[in-house]
Image (cartoon, rainbow, N blue to C red; front, side):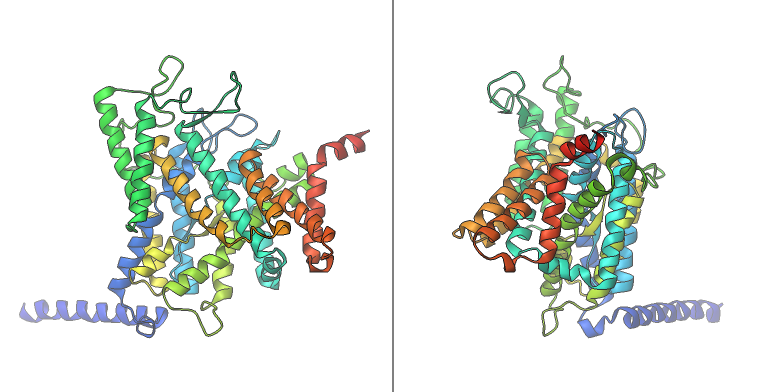
Length: 496
């Protein structure tokens, strides 16, 4: 008995040492000055910093397409299925980023990209959710080809830096408007003299609106104090407050008879919080539908537009993560750049195939790196946490939009901070940058903002006598956008 009892711990210890040795070899832990415990902690911090996407992505993708159908099917928004699909794709792609690229970078459905799908692509007459996700898959395939051929970097150089910044800022403004609208703080005013109204006829007179305001300031204060997971903490705290209010006041859902109710989900537990994941969104995509309904030129322009909103941020994100972890080489490049870009590109395809919008790298990964993560093992852990979260999707359905909307506005603030990098004293720069930013929220279209900005940039440079400064690819893209904006007249002319 003593031999048996003495042997078991010895074998267990040997197995643990073997596992640690394997992880050491694969992820080069010692070489990067880290260990398994630090990677686990960093991976968990990254997960906490970006888990809010499991709430926001379902809310953004919860509307109807142009045919009146919901993503994932059903007679009402399929929040649970979208949340589970979001967690699944994020988990798989983040795991692969860690295992293949050995880089502490996490991926999930991209904010801004999901807005393009929900508020632009599937709102085109005749377009369905499957068609919108099909364009995402097409865009992802194109990005993969661009990485393989080296053209991704070429296109990155073709678009002037100030326009790339303007696109990011414009998307931030657009997301903020969506956040204010989802909370009911900004409303369309069909009957009055103004286009929009603040609150209810200029007043904050409902408890759900107060919850949004409280969540907004709480999130801002936490971010100002640089509290890790500030967005998640703000969202969770506000949701708990919403639960208390609902339990005491029984506000219910908003309606004509109940204007003071919750706009989307009512924060009340009516069923199990943990259940087997539902993945109805998986496979909801169509590669043929967009071409049949829109034509080749329009699909090309839309795919290129999504691509622009997609891959530029990734390059900046991976450099930011590498810089935080002191992983940049002498030329300022992260390790295994090609592998990082490839996984990120495949994630766009995976998001479309999963019916949850394009997945991309999250700058929130820097929070995990700041807490000690230095290798891909942290991303492996983050991916595992996302996969476990698929079983908690019912929790997402309990978060009211008034509690989730502050996160959208907060992300808008973060994206807006880049605006200082634009040279506003140069009129030839200021005009296309301003129009790019302005037309996204004012035209309620990211596509329109990018298109107007590109066209005006080409015109301004030509008028200023700097026509040779414009990259040939910019002429091609600007020309495609001209055709896109004149698509209606062109179709009427061709149809006679």
